[in-house]
Length: 107
Image 1 (cartoon, rainbow, N blue to C red):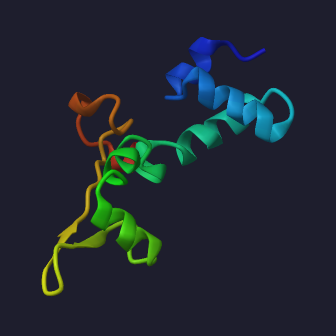
Image 2: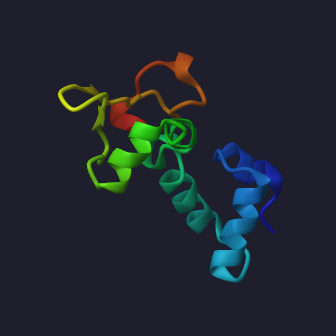
């Protein structure tokens, strides 16, 4: 049995764990759980930033047109746009930013 401590240490919350069980139709193994945790992380899936960015109308419109893939241009008007990319190689991203870059280990 997977305890809440295990999936929380992987960066998953209770709702995400229940969703994984629903997708699989059973309790996940620790390996499967780790795979979901990685794919749903900020580093791979923009877990924390995607909901905030989607609040901006121009971001949503550009996303709907398929213009954004890992980095993107958010149109400001007909002539100008803003280009941004954010990524952290701290490991685990957004969880322990003060542990320093661990690119070769975790990112």
